[in-house]
Structures are given as C-alpha cells and as structure tokens.
Image (cartoon, rainbow, N blue to C red; front, side, top):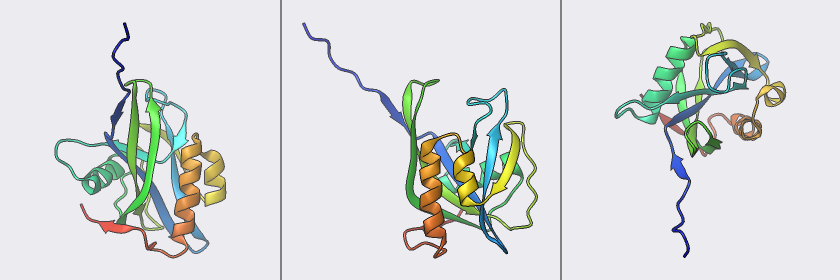
Length: 159
C-alpha cells in the first residue's frame, strides 16, 4: 500500500525590503543584524516584515520600515525578484517579494528591539556581510538595476 504524498507548505507571509540611499559616492544598502531573542539571531540581512490583516505589500513595507528603523521611504519599488527559503520554525517554504525602499541619505536609523546593529554598505561589502546567498544574489541584481534608477523592470508602489 502506498501512502498518499503530501506537500511542503508554501507561504508568502510578508516582504523583504532592500533599503537603499544614494550618497555622493553612490548607492548604499542598509543591512540589519537580528537581535539575540529573534529568529536567525546574529544574522545580517535586509529588513523583513509580516503582513497584518488586509495590508498591501506597500503598506507592510512602510509600516515595518518605520517600526524597525524609524525611516520613511522617499519612494518604494516593486521588483521582479523574490527571496525564497525554507523556514524550519514553520516547516514551510517562504517566498517574499523583494521591495526596494529609497530613503533620504541623511535619514537617521533608530533600531527597534528586533535588530541589534546596522550598517550602510556599498554593494560589494554588503554582499559579503549578508548571511544568505540569495541575498547576495539579490544585491547583485538590485545594484545592476540601480545603475539606471529607476530600473525599467521596477514598478513604483504607494502605501
């Protein structure tokens, strides 16, 4: 007797946000280090956030950006990129849209308790700081697209 096959659950519970600023010396990425009490503590990456109620992706990105960093975006861009990974805590595959949030170069980051450190880094250094290969690849893709900001394949979104 063969058992009926089941599937690994696939979810999209929120967003991944590449926060960038354009300085006199070019584009920089905001990387956050997860605090000790958080999932993936100590890891470096982009800002992530979960959807609440009937929020749109843009609303999630704006709310989470403010909650985690006290930053407000000058503009938000939907990209064609997805960040996907297996989430062992929920035994499911997570697929998150990658949103680019452009912030003012002089904006001050004030971290929430979810993160313990932050760094503004150029793409090459950011790629080596992130904890996951898929984020390193995302930085390559976004950096190439930032060369013609806004990229042809980005769509501006509003909260």
